Length: 385
Picture (cartoon, rainbow, N blue to C red):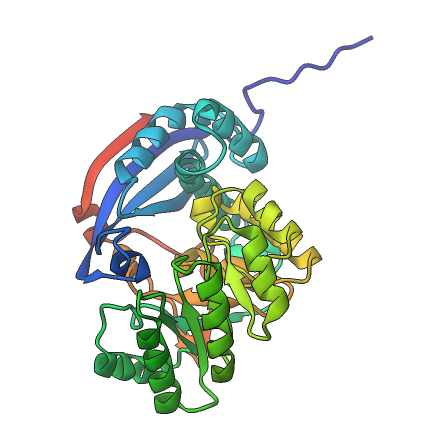
């Protein structure tokens, strides 16, 4: 009897070189949401980006990203540097196998949070490479349902923005062709939240698509009261009214009110999303690809969400999520943030309230010289072919 053994050296192409970069994107103005006004966090002044560039022996390449806000950037880079050597010699097509290998390489620090966020950059890079090799946009490789996705703007609606400027920002976003406006709420004085939402609704009219986001700052009684008040404003959703891990509390709100409940962005694994879905804790699921560990776990989450009949609204990183949202069965929303635009040479297009899926291969992205200029630390592994 012939015994078959599995070799660690693939017969085809293999990963020959990896570079990781820690890049800090400065924000023009300090950003404040409800977490700042309640004293739990400081205003955000920069975003720590983790980029992974991977090349194979045959010369194929991919670009991936992850990120951290306010804290965690150095830790993500440090963990990525520890596990990156495990990529060398692997067949780049074996993405699920590689994800598991990298996860086990850092198993002592867990299978969620910073550990998987670090490996998420590698996972995205491998999917980008796979789509480039097929000469397809990532959305097409995954099996796209549409060539554009509804999009809404968040960056103009933060709580540090005065009301008069908020009205200007909201109208400008709609005039630009963005499909919806999200307003931050969750202030200690709920009356101020109501005044701001009421003013924007009146300014934009009844047909404008509005969302609100409390960033987890309400307790259960406050969430009940605020959700009841906000019913009259015909919102697309109320986001994170409670702590991200209060699955039962979110489920009670989703069952009680007509306005959809949205949550999920702060969860950092497929297992945590499984608990949220199992409890029917929301109407809109908001997974974040880099936060859950990349595209591989995101696709598992999306499959569960589709089976449960949930709507989808991925959080942040529109440059990645426009592809993933295009591959979701029912019509999703993508969050429009122009913050990351200086990092790339390419731009996403907006038209008639929708974000167009890029037709370039892979993610359709390349790092700008500005991104290189903001890079504070790099590490390389293997030999560049």
